[in-house]
Image 1 (cartoon, protein in one colour):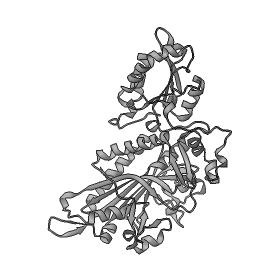
Image 2: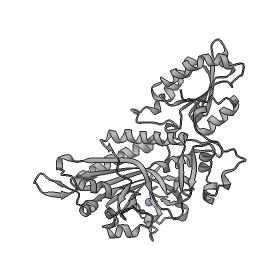
Image 3: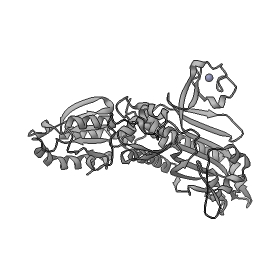
Image 4: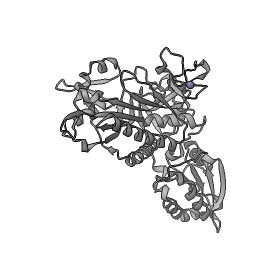
Amino acid sequence: MNRLSKVFRPFNNEQKSIFNLSKLSKEETEVNGYKLLNNYGLIRPSANGLFYLLPMGYRVIQKLSKLIDHNMSLIGAQKMQSPLLIKESLWKNDETLIDERDDLYVITDRTKNHFVLSPTHEESFADLLSHEQLSYRNFPLLLYQITPKFRDEFRPKLGLLRSKEFIMKDLYSFDIDEENARKTYDKVTAAYQKIFTALNVPYFINSCEKDSKSIISHEYYYSCDRGDDKLYTCGVCHSICGASLLKDRTLCPNCSYTLKPEWYNNGVEVAHTFYFGTRYSDRLKSMYVDKDGKKKPLHMCSYGIGISRIFSAVVELLSTPKELRWSPCIAPYTVCVIPPKDGSRDEIRVEMIMPELYSLLESIPNLKDDVIIDDRPDKTIGGRLRDAKACGFSFIIVAGKDATKNTPLFELYDLYNDKKYLMPRSTLLHYLVDRTKYLSEEKEKIGYLS
Ligand SMILES: [Zn+2]
């Protein structure tokens, strides 16, 4: 049984403010989502730009990872893990690459060898394949990982929106030629759109033109006042453009209309995909043997999703000033049950029906290990209800006075539908079966909030 009393979730009381902590930058103390995550014990700062993900916050990261894993398995991507420390030579032999980045953590080991704590792993995965004997039959090959990444931010800020260490899912695809690589690219892009649709937060895709580094790339943004990225939303054709890509131009790249200042807004980049052609394979000699027996360079794409960034961006975008809100599919727990206060008159009678209710809830197909009982002994029902709403649990069941009747009745708060009911157990269970269908991994259309 998941019991809230056993969860390490230190609350900050509002009086003992977090604002005195020297670990936080001024911006962080002003970010609402960050304050809520910290106040309700989902994260803690460790040092400037570095954070602990506490158990309740880590559950959200795990749910995001599961959503991604599911969609990756549908397109045949294989999960693995590369070392986080990458030998510097992989970066070094591209003089442009290492010179243009001043945000790499480079460390020296006891034998004076240098390693990069990598922010991205194109080199690492291309190097892996360069040492294998691979034929055209081995492709397409899609490999991905979900691991911490590192960036020596000059000015880390906004909590997990711009931190020195972050969790990213990165996928690398390898194909025998451009035509196949583009097919793979489209397949992964479609999977990304399914992931973002499931998260049910409006997102924008910015398609980037050919530049010196890659042939095709797409950036995924959430529109967010606190975001660091600048966006233009064209008022004529409604296409989105990253302001960094506009450089000195003021024309919409799509319809060539002159962009107006009022079309400018802030965004957070949450994913980025690239088609690189043979850029990495040429340099690192990632080859395969073709039908004609000749060695040829592989065509490579990479695809990143910022998991810890989505975690904090979703909170920033959906929460109220006092309460955390999530995309329902990543709420830390979907159901929270609140029994009577310890030692109260109702406690003994409800205590008898509680284990059965809990196991019935857990047996709902989409609720396995997604139900928690708030059994904290020192809190009233009202206090726990406030906490449960503040944490953004999707459904809150209160077993109070009405649960002691001959036919027990339960209060149900459907948080994301803003509804409250009083219902007997069977109705409650049917309601939850129906309303948690959005969690089903088979279901591709969500429409839960609509
Ligand atoms: Zn336009």
